[in-house]
Structures are given as structure tokens and as C-alpha cells.
Amino acid sequence: MAISQSRSRRAATGKRLKDYRKKKQHETGSRPFLPKIGKTKAKVTRVLGGNSKVKLLNSETINVIDPKTKKAMVAKLVTVIDNPANRNFIRRNILTRGTVVDTDKGKARITNRPGQEGTVNGILI
Image (tube, rainbow, N blue to C red; front, side, top):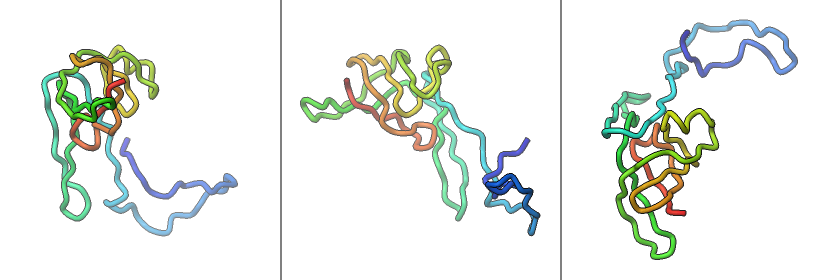
């Protein structure tokens, strides 16, 4: 089934709304990209206006900031410890915003949305 970001067919009251036009291409959605820990791999997709987005599929590194020293460094991802978005993402090693991961520098929390931004950024905790 296609993913759509168009208006709902139902009103807030539950009334069925009439179709007044056909579906438009700019209303199409896409499946969510759930990046995992692994050899870094990304996909570039074309979006509205001829622009492009980098969708992350796998990543083996994370850009972390040490809050004490205010220094940024690149760390190697080891495993997912906690994921508030979905508890099943922990055993699948899926990276989302808010996920706590184990790195070679220590535990870090992901602060960006890797599936939509193409990189993994975090802060040491």
C-alpha cells in the first residue's frame, strides 16, 4: 500500500469528506529508514524541487561531544543499550533520536535523526 501525506478522508467528527481532486505526486510519502549499526551505507534520494536528501542505512561511527571538555570526536559504535522509541529496536540495533548507544569512548545519546540527516551525532553521558 502506498504511503500518503494527503488530507484524511474523514473529518474530525467522523463525517466522510468528498474527493475534490486526484492524488498529487507531492503528497506521496516514503517508508521510514531505520538505520542500523554496521558498515556505513547511505542512500541519496531526490525530493521536491530537485533537491536531494541523504538517508542513512547503516553506520559504524558517531560524532560525539564531551560536555565536560566541549570537544568533538568520532567514536566507533558498539551496540544499542536503550531506545525510548521502541523496545524492539534495541535487539535490532536500530539508531533513532534519543537512543543510548555504547561506543569506544563511553555511553552516548543520539541527538539527531540519522535516518533523515545521513549522519549520527550524539553527546556523551
